[in-house]
Length: 548
Image 1 (cartoon, rainbow, N blue to C red):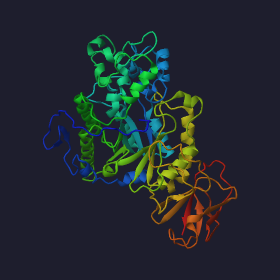
Image 2: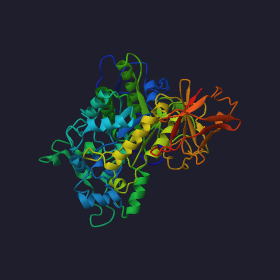
Image 3: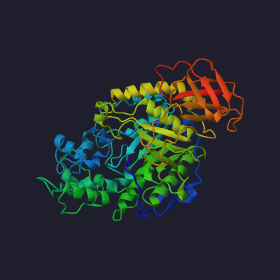
Image 4: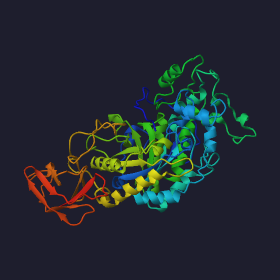
């Protein structure tokens, strides 16, 4: 994940690439695209409409799992282990060796997934209430977690020696879930350039890290014999220059150069773009996902991004008797491009009902597994996630929740506990979540989300009993209270007598998971619900069904 506020200063640039043409295919530039309704242009892609399966699903679980989970130090390890002064650098030097000698390719080799039991994990996720599942296909570390024929650094040849995506896909389909994949690799060409740097300070100052010097020939007789490290590290696209003498100066250089969130084509590396498209296209064609998550603002790499989405939309129509069932998730859309794919808000929520269906992606901890969050018991609580889900759904969104997986393929005890508690809440309240649509207003309460952009999830105030959220399913209205009133009486002002939002006669209210109809009174001040005793094991997101 990006994890920073990002807006590329440069947009688009023509791609120079080459690809073998196939009969009957259409081509934009040099990329072969499945023929069909969608052309690889913004205007054509804006014909896309959200499929109903996604609108009904509401809640998904993500395994944001790659070799970067092996050190258990959190996100971006592949970048940060090459930045002197960073805690990941310190951890790497202490536990594995200096990055001049032991680079990230060695972490790839250490990733064995030896305790991975995907069947058990997916059974648990289904029990928790997930209706779709997402697997990480390639992160900024540039290792394909699938049987890739266009990129030798993949998990069939390196690390687990398994087709991670292929295994997930078969098991997900067998459980009746929709299958999604995430691809973050468009940023590898700049985000991974720290591997070509050096320590600015200390006894090894000025000595370049492993990526700068290694060639394919160096692997002879090694575990990586036959693999080219430059293919993994992406080549010298944006190398820190000689002569930097302090950590502060190095950090400033990275921030201004490889640390910017760039969606542009690498100026001197068209081969990266060519193989990126082919790798992503193969991921789509081989595993036929229902959803593709791109960790990008709008679409990446100029024309190549447009080509990929057009290919996916047209391929999906071919798989589904002419109906495009595909969803592509991307971020920070400009107004003129909105609607070409689904808007994703990373670690954030919306201020109000969004016109088009959208998604929040967030995590109970860090994107890649971080041991300290477990040992210090600092994961998000089930209550926090339940409240967030209700808020998101009331505003026309879905929630994709990452449960970090350790390098060996397991999850920890706190994660099991989280899934058990949240799953019990979902089994009671799913009636008012799954298959619902927004009401005329999302709810009541003081403003909470600061805006409708990434990384605002911790900027709002804490919810309480004054926060009401609505969902609808057909003619049925559901309401959720995000707190329990001390008085034992819940007031819903929007449903006051004579209101125009819901003019039907309200005969009563049932509490989801409760027993029988609750007493209500309706006057000019609102609908007042007399509550039963507070359920001892309930999270503070209480659902009610309005009877009319």
